[in-house]
Picture (cartoon, rainbow, N blue to C red):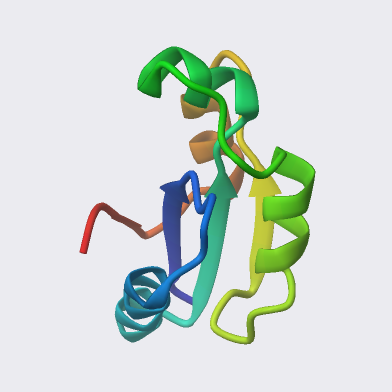
Length: 93
């Protein structure tokens, strides 16, 4: 089974996100999405997301295009990569 890993904020879900999930699905059999933590988003983007991380996580869990959704790490993104062991890391659109 080929696993595809995506990272993102997914604050306001839109058609572009759905397109990325569809493209990721074409790259493998299993799509795993990592939802950015509120604290990390604030550091990177300079402001907190509109929707809290738990709400963004819960919303994505209900999309059939995604097989697994997890919250990102607060300090080490590479740890999740080691745990999930993806075959493909999909970046951007």
